[in-house]
Length: 478
Image (cartoon, rainbow, N blue to C red; front, side, top):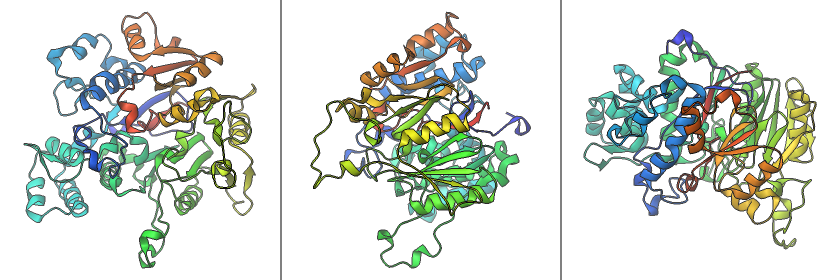
């Protein structure tokens, strides 16, 4: 893609998706050791071949049929053949799809490593944070760009020598940055395990020719002033923000979650930046419990269309569970685990508006930000039945990616949530069947409306992230 042809613009969660950044599962995921899984933010070890061939590959195919059909239409037999050795999905291979609409992170990293000056600086930075020797640094600088990008991502030299840890969370590209209108707000991660991927992303956005016209629109969250002087730094609050806690619900309105991964100071600094640079007029902060099972706000709600949202019912003040979990109100915190919601308007930040529950906020967005005249609808995780609501939220029933308004991608294992979609009139189709129908012209992308597309998920869901997490939209239609 020519730099002058590239456009950066995201003003909603559901406008037709035109361009996004992804990263396909790499060999590092297949090398996560059980003893290090939680340190590297994984709950379990995954079977790499299953994740790739039987699950994530369908995601890439689906994205191409919707965003860049010329790259895959009529080629499915070749793509799926044994002879291809999955070259279609691997950026370093001659048969790679090389789409400029479904953009692979590794491809962009390889591009910037072709620039000698950038390669030297990035290699030095990676070696510094990973504690590599100077001789290793010199060896890496002289490594071909395509090979070096794989090393930076997987942590492995040719010959399977491990020189630093993999970064398996890079498949969750939502967290490296978020596009807000024609700006990019860069991630400032909460966990050390994500430091290298954040560094790589920063170098890509500031050095790749694709983003040349938007360099002045890249926003970095500053660290809390002199945080390093605080006694017991590890006990103080650091300034952190991750993309899963940021939602662009309209061109003028952004939601920011305060969560396990995004601190209050991170949200505050983001609000300052967004207002100072005139990016948006309104920011709503949603404070959720700092719990691993919630993690980011996009694990407890996402948007389906302008009047429909999928939500975890247990965080609502309106909903009563069917078959609720018993609560000891003297010792349990469950009865207090409702979001606190504050809305700040530019020029009136000293007078925030408060919402009593998540549905009130989402209803207000649908009606007042998006001009919805119809009744606002909520689809609840697990059909709002305990324990299916929390079981399916754990496997990302609420973490859905909209390909266009009303057409979303989720996991096939969340049966009760699927039933809730059907009850609201949505069609449901398996990704494999849909790909087959798109290839045979039995169905066209334009015909697909109000549909939940189900992706195979036996292994991929165990990585603890859905397709909202596994996407960084760069361009959506208004």
